[in-house]
Image (cartoon, rainbow, N blue to C red; front, side, top):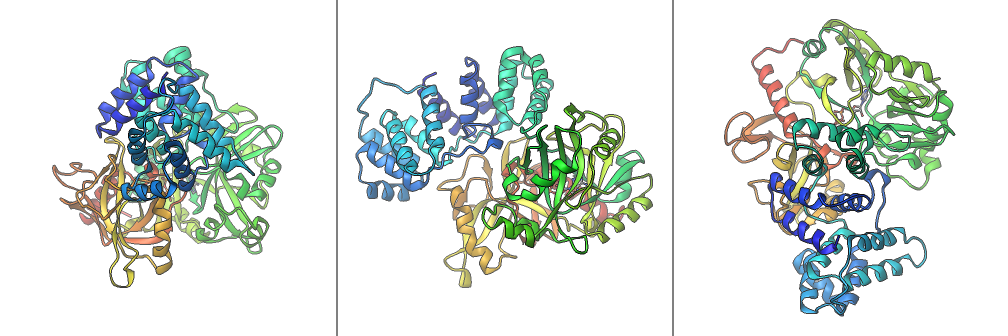
Amino acid sequence: MQFAELAAAYERLEGTPKRLEMRAILADLFRPLKPPELDRVLYLSQGMLRPEYEGVELGVADSLARKAVGVATHTPEPDVARRAKEAGDLGLVVVQLLTERPRLVADDPLTVAQVYSELERIAAANGPGSQETKVRVLTELLGRATPVEGKFLVRFVLGTLRVGVREMTILDALAVVFADGSKAARTRIEAAFNLSSDLGLVAGALVAGSLDGLATIQLQVGRPVRPMLAEREPTLAAVLERMEGRAAVEYKYDGLRMQAHVAADGTVRLFSRRLEETSAQFPELVRELPKALHSLPAIVEGECVPIDLETDEIQPFQEVSRRRGRKHDLAQAQEEIPVCLFLFDVLLAGGTAVWELDLPERRATLESIVRPNERVRLATQRIVTTADEATAFLDEAVAAGGEGLMAKSVAAGSGYRAGARGYWWIKYKRDYTVGLTDSIDGVVVGAFPGRGRRAGHYGAFLLAAYDATRDRFESFCKVGSGFDDAALAEMPRRLAPFRTDEKPAEVASSLVPDHWFRPGLVLEVRGAELTLSPVHPAGLGAVRAGVGFALRFPRFTGRIREEKGPTDATTTAELLHMYRSQVRQAAGTSDS
Ligand code: ATP
């Protein structure tokens, strides 16, 4: 495939905010392709070279890209920099410059295969001399690119490909190309993706055997599974009702979710909730897990929490978050902030896939393969049949340092649902029963300048929730409270990678902030209540036509949810659920 065809498709995608149109454009793009070209186009369209969990990065900074653009278009670098500042997007500058200065080698069009392998070279360049290599390869590519190709090349290497295609839309398109586009087909394709976290692999299986080909996708050690997620209920009585009067309840540990893959030879890879590899930050878990598990290979899941090894007490979450992203002084961090992994699930045991078994069998398997030690333990679990028993367990969990309980279905069909949020798991934090005290994770899509003491900084932020049906981010509040000086001062740096000069196509908001951001950074906020709002479009029409949800008195909790991507933030469906719980409580129907 010519790269020009791909760039033209991106151009069309950029021009439409409509999910159905996007699906059609993507379906036309994918239809004629076969692996490995198909995988490459899939990854490229997500702004990546490989599935996200592999963490392949191009390592191209703005300055490096500007240098390549300058050389390729014979433009002094300061001019490129000035134009980029004015336009707010180096991609647009490339369009201008390449249009002004036509290509030298006009009859040597780029193919997708060439572009992909050159991008691989950029990613692979490491160590001394790597910067020069990256600039040279990018310069060569730009030298052969048309203006539109150049725009997407530059945006791709800078990680700002703004075609607005997310996995869910790509899965829609795959269902159209390889099946009948029905919901059932879409569900099967999504299930295979949830199990493998690799769109290229899924597409390969579809090409080989259509929907039946998906059966070839199995669990594999080292390839993370998208985590099963929990719903909420406002009272423990409601939780029990959902579970038909019988549930497994577990302590809800407040830490970092971790999926541990332990190979037959004892090699350990740890993945975060977002499927990023975190093994290097937790060497003591890498060391202890093979000792604690005696049926390898295995894939287990748990929550990693800080623990005081003297008293065996669980410590506040903030402690463990300090361990994340830490690359230096690991030995010191291990001593200062020791962690323990509380295991609550098993997907693979002794090489046998057990994820489809019902929860009681998975728990029995987990208990049979774990020899708990100081660092690797089992999550406390009990079977309850009444709200009173659940309440007593909740008290116990909170006293032990948990933030609430997780209730899990033990019924037939309670297998592990990768990537799905449903009522098989229900999270219940102690404070649910008093108003809206559960926190909300909002995606920053805009910022307003500060005044007075905050002059020169951002003063407030526009937050959005993800609407999975409409596949867009819808604003629900403007938040300025709860930021101390240090937090505010840090925001420009945190937000810089997401800056954009116009409203991103995937954002819906009737407020117009002074600065727009592509959805990326997730902040935890609390508020007094959810109200119906004509101003904010979050969940528009879910309760009443023309109104969405707004969070009243929002306040930043101080916690940036680094382990969450924008689509992992609170969804509009969750806002609707919280709103309904609140209404029920206000009506006095709360029974716990
Ligand atoms: P979510 O993961 O549901 O999107 P979140 O990241 O905001 O939401 P919470 O709402 O606090 O987290 O609760 C869900 C998380 O609780 C799980 O993802 C997991 O990390 C954690 N957790 C703690 N204890 C358990 C347990 N026993 N079983 C399952 N998950 C647990």
